[in-house]
Amino acid sequence: MAKRGYHHGNLRQALVEAALSLIEAKGPTGFTLSEAAKTAGVTPAAVYRHFEGRDDLIAEAARQGYEIFADVMQYAYDKGQPSALASFEATGRAYLAFARKYPGHYIAMFESGISVNRTPELAAVAARARGVMEQAASDLSQHIPPEKRPPASMFSAHIWAMSHGVVELYARNSPGTQSPFAPEDLLESGIGVYLRGLGLIGDDG
Image (cartoon, rainbow, N blue to C red; front, side, top):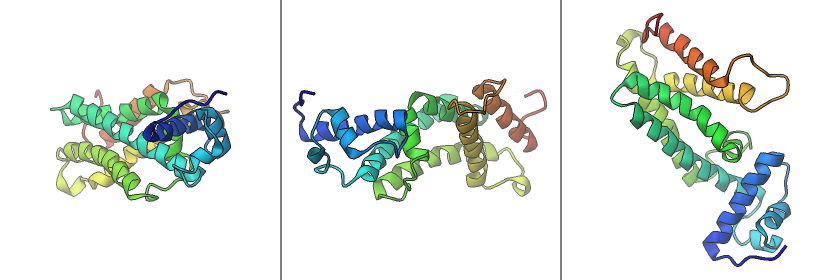
């Protein structure tokens, strides 16, 4: 493969994009740094000028994924305004949409075993994404009597877990987990049951 000329920043990004394609095809532990280098069209030695090892490369892919994820979630939240309910439901749908559109990033973020606390930068952007969901939950919680109101962080964690479960089981073509219902329908109905339980929507909502 002919080697392409890269500026410093472009080579780093080319390696991240190579890793994302390999993560999507082989999983986060199914490729080597040498394969990432070959996919990017550079020598293995070039990788080590930018990343200490495969986990370092995957962590950068995860960080970039969280940047996109936070932006997607913020857009969904803003689009639902001024309705707290619409914003909350939009963030749930955005989670599923993100997982489908950015599978390599999603795997790097949630299935690679890379801790969000690996670097301050990764922790910060993960917190920003989480904060959008918590804000949406907090807005909606204001409609619940204080004595019945779960903490916004718990509220959003429940929906995050539900969204994640639907993605993992039914939106990733996992063997033996086919559902007669579309993932979007599963998530929407699940959120509906949860919100009815909190008294936030009626039985016909």
